[in-house]
Length: 439
Image (cartoon, rainbow, N blue to C red):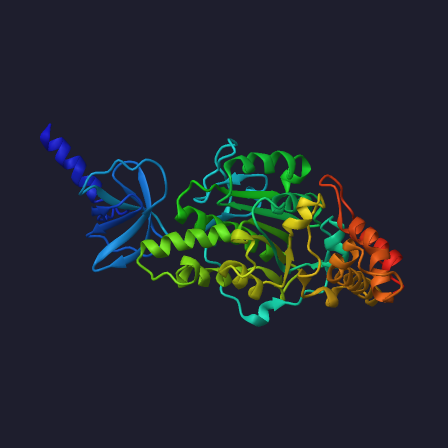
C-alpha cells in the first residue's frame, strides 16, 4: 500500500506541468486599528493581502524594513503574529460592456445582487500615461438639461467642471438633474465618501429605467476604509477611460472630490506625513491633479470624458485647500450660494463667481454676448442691492442700475428650475438670446 502511494506521488511530481511554487507570507507585528505592520514580507504598494483568516488589507508603504498595510474594512479581531499572505496583484480594474448597469464597491465587487460580473476586461487603476498632445481640444457643447448651465456656463464634451458649495446647498440634486438629461453614451458615477442612503436614492431616482442600462456606479460610503475610498475614485476614472478608449462619449460624475482628499489625508497622516494647510499632508493635495488630469477628450479618436466633480467647501470657505487646488486644475467651476438656497432659488447657482473656461470656444457669438449681458445686469444689481432695498436709490439716476432692476426678475427666473424639469440646450439658448440678446 505504501509503495503504491509513493509511486503515485512520484508520478505526479514527474508530470511535465508540475512546478512547485513557494508561498510568500509574513507575520503581523503591529496593528493600531487602521494601520498594520508586517515583517518577513516584501510586496509592491497596492497589493491586497489577507491577514489572518478573513481580514483584507492593502500595502500602502514601507518603514524600517516593515511592510505597512491599511485595513480595507470589517471587523479585525487579530492576534500578534497573524499570518499575512498576498491575495491580489495591484492596480487592475474591471472594465467594458459587462460593467454597464452594475454597481460595485471600491474593490470592484458587485453589490447590486445581480451576481458576478462576467466577461469584463481590465484597465490599470492608475490609468495609462498620456502625452499632453494626446489630449484633444473641447469644441462641442454638451447638453446637461439645466437652463442656467446650458445658457450661462455651457459645458463642452471633454471638459472638467467642479460644483463647489458648502454642505446642504444642493450639489447632489444638481448632479441628479444633469445625469438624467446628459447627452452621453455612458455615465460613470463615483459616489465616494457620501451617505449610504444616497446610493439607493441615486439609483432609484437619478439613473432609473433606461438610464440604468448605460450607467456604471462605484459606491464607497463614508464608513468604508480610506483606502477603499481612494480606490473607488481611481476605479471610476479607470472605467471611464476604458470607454473613452472605445470612442464613447462618457460623462464621469464624482461625488465628492473632497471626500477623496479626506481619504488621502487619513492615509498620509497614518504614514507619518507632516500636516500642512488645514491638516492636509502634501500627498493628499498632490493626488487631485493626478486624478482630474485623466479626464478629457482624446485627440486620436472621437472618445471623450466629460467630468463633473462636486467639491465640498468646508464652512462655505472658498479658499479651502481642496477647493482652491481643484479650481486651479479644472476647466470651469459652478459655485452654489447658500444665500440663494435660503431664498428658495434652486439650483442655487451663483452666476457671478462661476465660470466655464471653454464656453467662448464652443458657443456662437450671439450666445456669448447674451450671457455677458445677463451677467452684467446681475452684477450691477448685486452691487447696488442694499441701496435699492433701503429705498436710497432714486429711479433715473443711473441707466445701468435702472436696467439691472428691470431685468432682475427675468434673471432670477432664468436661473431657477425645478429639480424634475429639463431644459435642452437649444431652448436655453433661445430663451437667453430672446430676452438678453439686444445687449
